[in-house]
Image 1: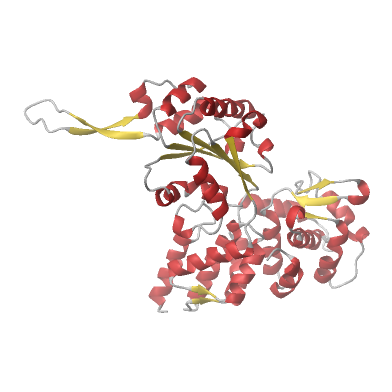
Image 2 (image 1 turned 180 degrees about the vertical axis):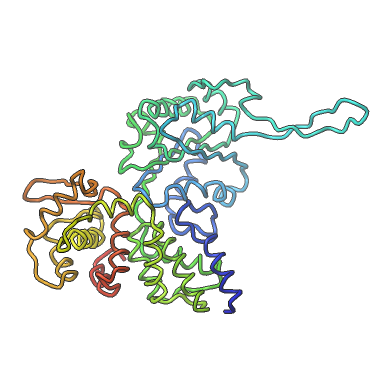
Length: 417
């Protein structure tokens, strides 16, 4: 690789990897075949609507972004109108639909006055053409969508919409389904269950297709790296790809983030192959450029004026332990499970009493309430309130040499493969 090629690869990497924004190209979207086909099947059936839900950072918005190109490929005989908008805390039912319907527009010929009567092109918005006001009702939407067959409206970040306005979408889905309107509504948001996203969903259960988005598997995360490498004309060696995928803990955000910086480190040494050394250096850069919200949460949790304080090692051990849980227990950990990782980090024997108070403090306002607890006093289970935090804590631990990548992989050996 020449110096010029290295600069080009570094710039191109930012277009291929997208840690800050959802993936919007089908060619770069990895895995999720079951979720994709479920959405496409629902769109093809009149009266069915979709809710996509899951933890923060698992790729819900990326799935929402590729619905249009996926439909173009899997349902080529039916031209679809696909609109995607984001909901905000300041939105109402009506304002969300104002944004959505204003995305539907077309161009018409308009005759010109004068001797030169060549028609001009005039953009026309759907709301204007149908004489709709800003104060849209459920019946307004039903009548409008009835005239837009094979349309798909995606409302992303639905969880940010105030509950009193979100409830109207339940009524809308029931109305659209009962009236057999040939349009599909797709709601996307952060939630552990459908109940956490849609109030009174039982009343529309037969009209609603639930698409949970679990964390991605190691294989799917490696596919992200493989596809990115193909786009860049580069490759990740086996150990490098495995290390990134394991440290990402099912969250594509971190695969994109570390993958980006690892590629750039490889380009700096003019190599087409990303090695584990590039990944280690990529971790260091990724920590420096981490999401400010996550970085601030970490700093608040471990801050102490005492040099002998062990908040940082305890948090790292907790993150490692949380990341080794699989299945229904994914993300949860018990105090007893923290002992082993903390002993490896501190290099000495510890007991639960050594850090039990620290776990309790991590639930306090002073420490940013980064942990939450479930269960009874003798069987407490903890987990991080923000699923993006454990991988960040681990990356910081590796960057600060508090734990080596090799030890981390050993501790994660029992994680989902």
